[in-house]
Every structure is written in structure tokens, then in C-alpha cells.
Image (tube, rainbow, N blue to C red; front, side, top):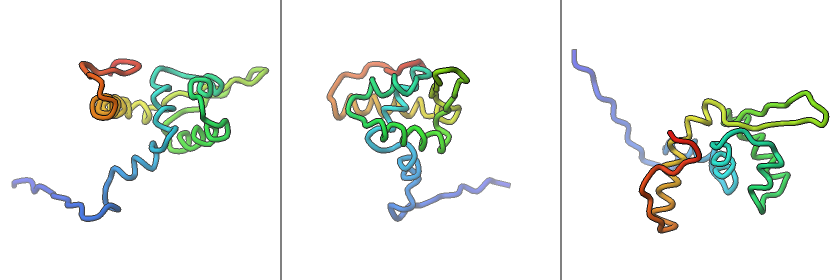
Length: 124
């Protein structure tokens, strides 16, 4: 018996599967947060220092949203003063290739830089 090929046709913007992804990782600050965490775990203060212009309240909200969506992991250490680190979850790590591709596309088509290799914080 021959397997049937299922064809899905998208007719409206609401049916675009990319929209669900953009709802989770889109916006002005979430992609840079994910990009920075691709380098490894970071504390709140480190993130805020490497993202000039972001309000602390906005950073806190985005970190909570990314954690709720399973993209990042928040690890609190039982120390005085308290220490919290953020890192990518397994689900967040699965975005690495997509983030590198988006970065390379942006450099080539928007920033008009020459892209000759994968340019990511860690190799794929």
C-alpha cells in the first residue's frame, strides 16, 4: 500500500505556523536575550549590562515569559545574597540553528555584511 502525501494549504495569515513562534520569541528584546544565553548562563545583572536601553522591569517580564514558555531555565542558588542564573532549556537550545540562520540572513540582507560562515556564540 502506497503512503498518501498530505498537503496542507495555507490561505490566511492566521494559519501561518510561524506566528506561534513569533508570539514566543518575537519582539525587540527576546531575540537578544536568547542570543546572549546561547553563549552560556548569565545572571540578571549581566544581562541588563549587555542590553543597554532595556528597562529592568521589561527584562524581568521577558525572562519570566521565556521561562513560562520553556525557552529558558531560571536557577536560584540558596546563597546570601541570592544568586539567580538564566540559561537556555533544551527547548531553547533547539532554537540555536534558527537563531544563527536569522543572524546570517540579517547580516547579509539588512546589514549588508559578508557572511562566510555560521557566526554563532557556540558552534552548532
